[in-house]
Image (tube, rainbow, N blue to C red; front, side, top):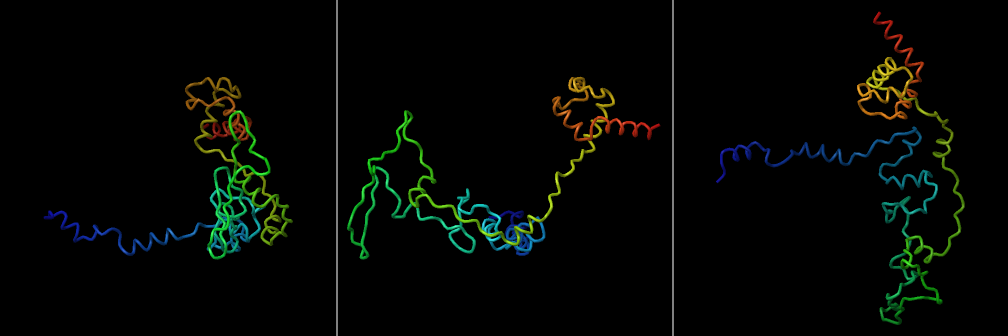
Length: 237
């Protein structure tokens, strides 16, 4: 028998989980595509219904689409990379101890091919055993050495992206806390990095000498820090 607290909970509607409106909002967030950041021409040409790899292929942004991605490829569709017939294809060489059944059009067994060493060529033996084989070796055996594909013409998106001038390195800013720390160490020790490094009171984070020099350089150099110290003293005076 349910106690009064459980009855109140059942009547309040909280026991049934999120409401329909809340479920709709959750579904919207899950289905919402990530915002594409970049030049306007790239945002306009991007198709949100396609995967990242499909968009890259369609826009001509992949240098070599024959490379096998770490996450696999799509089974088909526009811009999807097609998997080569490998593991179950009839052209793949069989290893030792393996076999393949050959059937005719009616399904009758006409031959059994046994795997093993062909043409008297065995895998190269080493003191630590046979060398490992990767998917590159399998693809070379299946299709042979493929001739490099001719370069494809650049798309309008690529031409537009290449025409955008390089803005160069972005300026780096010093945080307010780090600026206060730099003023403190330069006010006390000047440009003596060794003294700053050994000061346990100011160098509480145990910055190395290289890190101290890098932060002074990022702030504009020792002269800029001294100018900031003089300006701060003038304001106080």
